[in-house]
Length: 167
Figure 1 (spheres, rainbow, N blue to C red):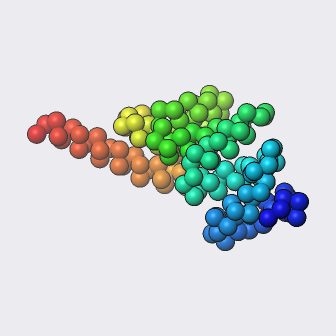
Figure 2: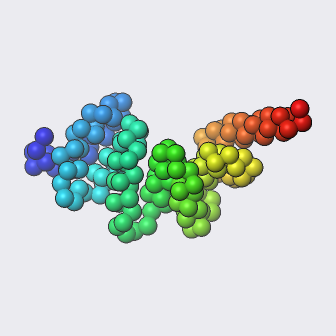
Figure 3: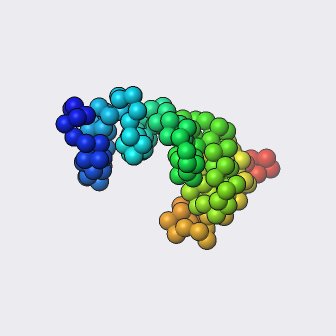
């Protein structure tokens, strides 16, 4: 599709409608002409990065998020996204500083706390992961439910490790 045929705003609206209909691939395909331009509009790049992340295209998503992060203003959601994608790419240690950057500015940011717990879990730093998940409990009902599940899993894993040491 020719980027001139639709405005970027119309393309974003159409892509969001496709996304809501569960058509992430079609939504991303609709945005491709703008993504290939020298400087895609930030709102379009943000939407594309989210779609790429959902589709498991982590390298492309990371590149898009990093492009957005290079431009002011600083955004907690963007730092969370970069860290989350790095963790999905198996780079949990590299993800942690992104979450910690958010938490230094916004200590009660539920996304950053939960994502930090996930990264710590991937690094087998279970006690720290449990502490991060516990910090989420009073902040966000949906994360609280997930955090409780992760706390139980991590406590079970710790018990399994301890049981293995005893036997």
